[in-house]
Length: 269
Image (cartoon, rainbow, N blue to C red; front, side, top):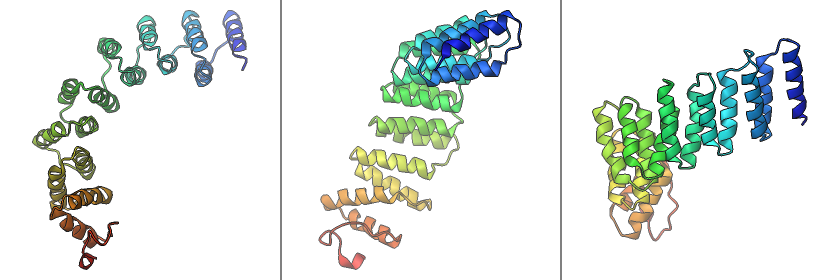
């Protein structure tokens, strides 16, 4: 790719006062990003900024910020946003936040969030989820809970926090959030029940799994068959009477569990 020729054409058009299409310049930045030419993208963007022409937008800024972040250059991306006189948007910040979280660079994340506050840009739901999953994945549960408290009216933020806690083995803490969720007027849906049941089962909390399954059924929801089979198998191994009840429920629901005949009485089928 002859990227240098684009720079030469840009300079020629600028010097000869030929109208330059901002969209064409942004397309060039996207191509540079596509071919992993981070330094060229950064350099060309600065050329655009320094030209004095009205060809720089938040979109072109975001393309370069994303390119830098894809290469782990979060600090440079943040400094670029601070330097140029273009107001960033949530998409600009989302690239930096996502990169910080994936690299567990919470020191830089703090600086990015402070810059975001300074620019009066508000977190959207997707960015909240990224932050919550990052905090819980790193064990920063209190930070994740603080975020949820700022969006207490958003069910999806609870889901993200509970999912992060379950994935991090903190199932008891996820279960405790259920009461808070209900206090705020939300119904626990099928996806949330499934997530909690899986978390309990992975954490060897079979009784808790059974309680959640029973609650689901009482509400007329159908638990995930694969999870139920796993719970039933675990119950059979320790000779729990609930195992047969679980298999009976599956059979009545039209599912034939894959167990050997020595575990399940023939009359169940």
